[in-house]
Image 1 (cartoon, one colour):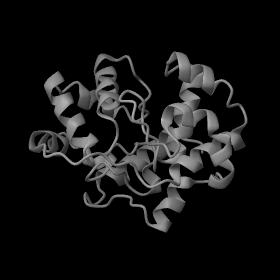
Image 2: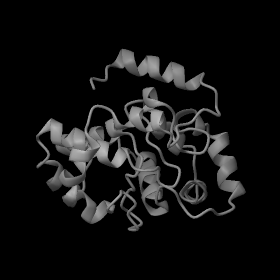
Image 3: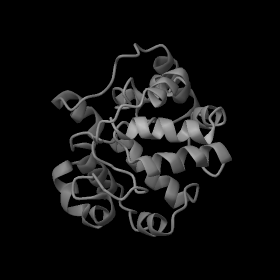
Amino acid sequence: MVITKSSIAVVLGVVLFAVASAYADDNPEDVKRRVGSGNPADGKAKAAQCKICHGEDGNTVEPVIPKLAGQYADYIQRQIFNFQEGTLRDPNMTQIAMTLTNRRDLADIAAYFASQNQMKGTPTKNEGGEKLYLEKGCLNCHGEIGKGKPSYNAIFPIIGGQNKGYLIKQIKDFKSGARTTDISGIMGLVANQMTYEDIVAVAEYLSGL
């Protein structure tokens, strides 16, 4: 999928004026949209190396490794491209990303994880984190409960149910400028308005969804 500046502007315009309660689900139509052009059945075998860290169905229990279950396939692919280009860095992931040179294989692997039921956490009551999530406008991009929106919004990941440790690190990296891969430019602005306590509270809220 080719993403241009004009397409970003269109997407953001749609997102900001979308009904806040709209979010993606695990119904067949939403699953089909987030899977994209890849073949999940073929991707299951091709994803063997990925499952070592991310889990058989994309639900890793390692706190600083992201869950991939039910994530948008387009988003997963874009993250791999970022590792290949060096705009994202991780000793293990960079090395693995460099081996994924076949675009069909990558599309199939991403489709496999995207076809799984969306990631879920252990429900916890966190009114402070929920309030911050709403006040900072996070739902405008990530959906009302962090479960994403329809496929036109795949430039923003599903984060409801994501691992707390991973969320904290990513928001801190956006705040410090260590991570610059948000093509909308929104995450850096939002993160800069958050204290460390805010970041932890929002991460705890999201990880329990």
